[in-house]
Length: 209
Image (cartoon, rainbow, N blue to C red):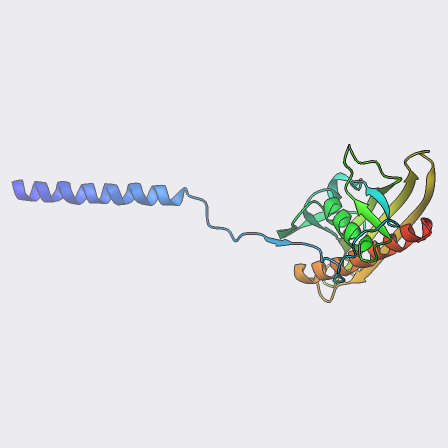
């Protein structure tokens, strides 16, 4: 009887430990796949060094609605409602991505150099950007490939006189190959390159370059 009692105690203890361990495991969160992070392409042409004839302008941080100001890859089911792609994001806030692409695009020719504003740096011009749209629109229905859409307004200002040198609207669209996130990112990347090329050409012309 004594032996049987000891055996029963051991078995009971083992069952209790097993239940305790299983209880601990069950409260842990399920493993989730890490989100995929995307960035926009850098212009492929080598940057040209600035020279004495290069005009330097401050590229201000673009203003954007709250929905477009973060790292979400924004989708629009109908052109009005906005949502975010699941499990994916941009590597930086969208305004920062676009500013960097514009600076790199301007630097390809060396005639105009865009820089990030610094309090101790005095430059003759400032470029303000108002980002209005940066999303993939399912204009043909949610089962069809969406349209990557970018819209922004530019204002070039003379920093000495504070006079507006000019304003320019940019609107670019590129159709994705399919409705996958990777295809949407590829289409958005192309639209961004086209939009920033348009902006760079306009700035250069306004400055006589």
